[in-house]
Image 1 (cartoon, rainbow, N blue to C red):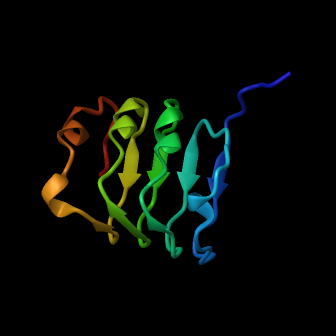
Image 2 (cartoon, rainbow, N blue to C red; image 1 turned 45 degrees about the vertical axis):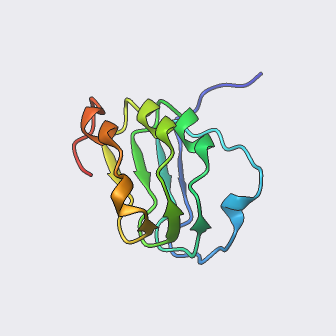
Length: 105
C-alpha cells in the first residue's frame, strides 16, 4: 500500500552531478530543494507531475534550455526559485504569472 506522506527532500549543496539525468521517481508532496549543486542540462519534466508541491528550489545549478511547460501544473506551489542557472532568457514561460498559489518567485 502506498500512502501520500508530506515530506521534504533536500540535497542542498551536495554538488551531485548528473543525478537528474538518470531515470528515477521520487514521490514528494511538499518540498523539493535541489539548490547549490552542479546539476546541468534540462529540468526533468517529471518534476511537473508533483502537483501538490508547495516549495521548489532549483537555484544555483547549471540547468539550461527551457523550463518544462508542465511545471505549470504545480498549482499549489507557493515558493519557486530557479535563479542562477543558464536558462534561455528569451523563452520565459508566460504561465509563471498564472500559478494561483505562487507568492515568491
